[in-house]
Image (cartoon, rainbow, N blue to C red; front, side, top):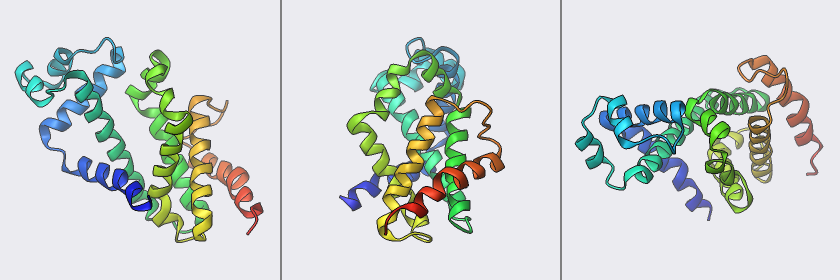
Amino acid sequence: MEMALTAPVDGLMAGYRAADEPQQRLVAAAVACIARWGVAKTSLDDIAREAGLSRATVYRALPGGKDRLLALVLGHEVGRFFHEVDADLAGATDLSDLLTRGVGRALVCFADHPALRTLLRQEPELILPHFAFNRLDRLLAVTTELGRPHLGRFLREEAIRPTAEWCARLVLTLTIHPLPGFDPHDRDAVARLVDTYVIPALEAAPS
């Protein structure tokens, strides 16, 4: 099971890095259109115009239609996030710095991603089920595998999973129900959040 869980992380990062120029244009155009109108009102023709590509080119690239497009966009954007956060976490100097970087980057990603914000506001039924029940378990497991090589520098093996899951749950809660007055772009504010609510919980956990 442990090896299987690394595949989504490594595979999505590799897919993001390997995306060619037409794929990047399609993803950027789809994100812009979804941010503007949502998924239901976005057509492949809209995306072709936004990307500056012919209708035929887009339909050839996406033989599965809108479903294939959404899978491409999701894979690319998640892969981009994994790639960027993995590079950022590698520079952490201690556990507090590591968690501040990870939580902060995730919160900013959710807060600033234009398509995601539109979907949470207009079509939450497309997003929220991924954060519930067995789908949440999968998300927490993948989050653990993304953080494992970095958390392993500062924590015992048995503490890695609960730490990663606690941070993921915190990010999801603050994304769906933002904390009044809290700015995820303010690194000092994120550091205070981590040092006040995350680090003490880890220190109080039984050995």
